[in-house]
Image 1 (cartoon, helix red, strand yellow):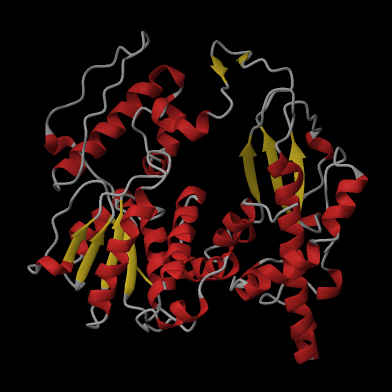
Image 2: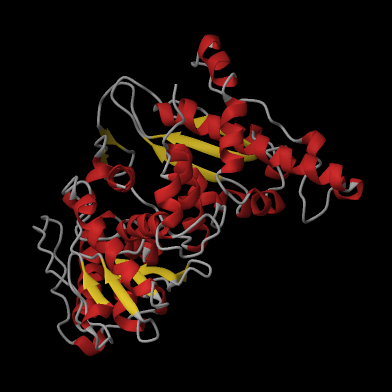
Length: 434
């Protein structure tokens, strides 16, 4: 058994806002293949990491109590008493006792890995009032509302795991209303084929409007939102391709209003800001932000597929590397990392600030920044022109620790596993050359 992949994703969430602790819990939805009710991520991976997180918090609370007995008392800052903190492993009934025992044997090792990765357990412990515990909900789960105890009486923070899978393998479902829906396993990984141009940011900015429109006019509402965003980007000189979607029979709404004066863009449509990585002179952001707000930054490394207009006069202050996702090209990032690191090195040596951007500022730019940080900075986050990297090399543990450091500042970072693998391969190839 290896450390679950999802563990790293959870770590990245922890180093930002810890939504399940701030909101009193969370719901995670996933699916799996036909004939199986829950995916392994819900049956094993997430339960493993809730246990690991609980143990890390427990260890932290114990350190507090050993340092000062007065800190053991429960208050608004430290949460529960460490003696009441549940550190046991909670698995669903269909996981065998043999497998459960094998998992329990490795929990302490995973806990140490988490604590040494640089994840900010202090912040998590300060806002999480009750230990985490997973609950499982499937299509066959029956819940009697009047028998559910009041949330305040629960002695844990619920991580509700909802499986959208149907064990019968039937994907067509018809509700009691006039509308029906289709569930296609794995469709979430290929949103380009069904999202009609709607990005995650656009969806969440208009979620309530989309839900309130109903099935009849939902597609037209999506088209309106996507078109307004396209015009908004086009007026700012950004990439704004026309989205062509074949209308359905039910779409009888009139065409979009061509009058640009009728288009209003709310402040929530703006991308997030620029995230500075401590005192490293490195920053992360989206290409849109780079085009609009890079005037006070010395140089820009653009990793988007499309070039942008920046405010820098010097040619050496701007570099465009059209990197695509690992789904499109498994070696795109790997092949461009040498140029990215050399560009960063030449500018950071002169004490310049560097903004690394990509389409959303969450994946490719984060991976490029990670490669630069490991290649040119030491453990303390100081630029050393690659001296420490050439002497110590790189391990997966060290790369994980550096990534956690990046995500402490870039709170929306969500690097894909495919791109992270390319970064690790690049770093290993650099060590081999040295």
